[in-house]
Length: 371
Image (cartoon, rainbow, N blue to C red; front, side):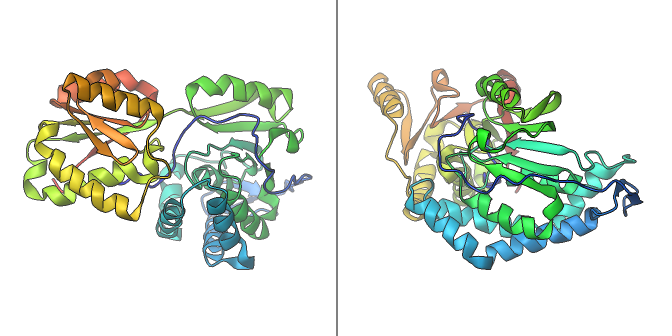
């Protein structure tokens, strides 16, 4: 069972309310003398090819993690001191970045998307990334994708995570200066960009509001291509054999996926469909949650709404168990509620039915990799 360690999706204030992070950098003028890179794409003469971009990105990430110019340490301390994210979540994300952003991984990513392409898909066009802030460094994937494509990155950083990504962007700018156009935590600080592509990660309800600001400020062309990712949760399927092999290990994996980043990511496990009743495994899950929470205490006890549902479920005799600031229950009426994990006894048909209810809000469906 994978943990939710990557990149999440959540609502955000499209105008931002935090202190500006990074700089407003303008004046990108890439040359247009075409050359062929190793994938056969035509790219501008003063831009590196994909392999060189990969090398520079990985070099920058390593330098950032090694605290070049004291940037990473300063960003982490400011993030923790301002109460934006707890230290254990920040350090966990840095560890995941160190393990996952490698030359081998990025080359494999490029090999998969390069099949059948005869040109650089973005070239040196401008891409505007509207980053979420529900997890630390949640916008990293969009940054890397933009730079790998050869496009020029512009970013609106979330006021809930203004320091971490800003630090890495400053280190990246040294290695790929022609591709780092500018970034800030307030849209109006970016100035008119006229981006041809917009990457948005957040709730469906906030897409129109965010894009209205983008167009009013001239951050994107009216015919800009919008890629909006609106997933907000993930599910898991467990068959009748999954808890028979190593229930303790599986419970720890489930709890990691439920509680890492306090369940805020689109890869956070919020719904489980299993061949087992919740009451059959509640004790093992509670033990695993206790172990996890000792090292990763929640930043808040419990939201008022969650406390209300917890009291209501207990009064009606439904199964409900505490998971730090969250609860887990088998009540179908709470499906999709924030900070509530729902457990259903069912089969694969039930899994497909529930998955269909979420549609584009569903990010992943996990299965037990040991089986």
